Length: 94
Image (cartoon, rainbow, N blue to C red):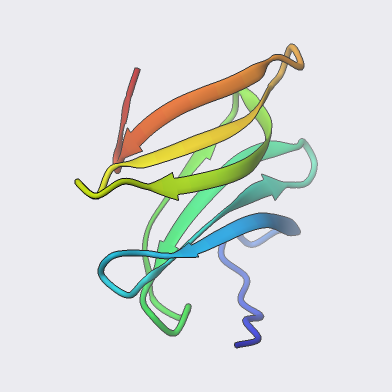
């Protein structure tokens, strides 16, 4: 499937994506100017945005995983260029 959507109104790069347990699409990456990490969840066609999250303390989010309990885990780089590991379930959980 080729997906060409503009979700945040500015240039973005998606580095990883997964088909979620509910058939939707979960994608992660970055926005430009300034570089900010982002995650987006859409319907199965990638058209209807169900939710999104921006992480101003990150520059890139490289990997996203979904667990059996439908929690999401992200791996990226924070502003100080350290590895970031975080669990999210729509609301950020530290």
